[in-house]
Image (tube, rainbow, N blue to C red; front, side, top):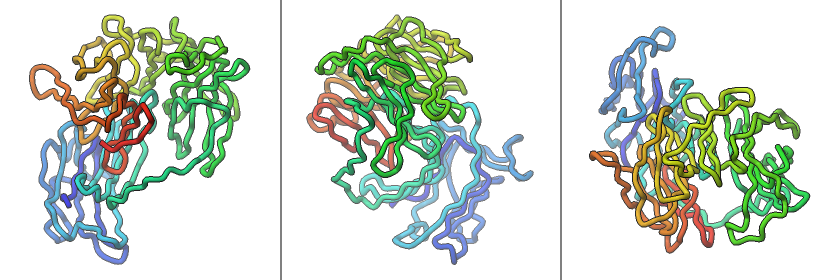
Length: 415
């Protein structure tokens, strides 16, 4: 198994790895002025890009280490004393992150062998671009795996009368679902999972047929609404003609506060937080919109008027997939850049940041690609096709592995 690895956009004053509560630490890295192990076991760290003792990066007047979230990493050599085995073990870390982020966060400490799918990770989870929702935002997550494959799925019930769960969001430890309910007297709802098999109805933000995107921002839930065209998914068209294109904030109970309509958009798709500002994309018309408070939104445009869909934040910018072509687009707050066409595809779908690299899914090859900016021109490296599927849609990182859902016929596949 690989050695212990520390890497994240964070400041940390100390990190302890203890094999069991009754024993002294196996390793203790204060990271005040260097990466040496103060436990006496000689498990010193080696790495790059870490700065020590900078002004403003202190806890209780003690200096700390600063990680830049791009290249900073510390690693311990493989040592059996760092193998947790089957017994109890504990990890303690002090971590501070900036309030305003232009990147995902990441692992605080990990020890994981992807070939055997064995090990653990302690991370601050930002799953963005999954596919039209920022599913996780600043969530502390501990994952452990021993290569076991779970082939069965537990049925947790159907939220309302939906024919499509459009979005899933974890917020303050609870799971929320935005749905498409296309009947003439129906509308898109938001539901809260009760942890067993029931879903609590949190109401309908408006009368359009879908709540297409959910986002956690400033400790609150925000929802975007859509008039979803079901015929585009080879389903009977919805008789509900009410347009969406609006954003709402959840106020409790079944109450939603209207925060404005986004230009001429009748349907919204993606949402993301970038530099402490909230952004939404449109579905059937081009547009990326920034929330400016009250009911005011600024249209940030798109690249050459092309539609942008799934949104992710990575290495200082917003990234967007496209339905008009298999492109990926980058927005830095001032303007747009085209990052090329992804493989022999016509559309791009979801994003995930895995092992520090941005990945994107696609149609109709059902493949996943990794962004490579090592040269003068951005390239998209093929990392595999998901079986014989035609469409890979959501990408998500869980317990050290990246997973994707597919169409047709709707499978989940580790990448």
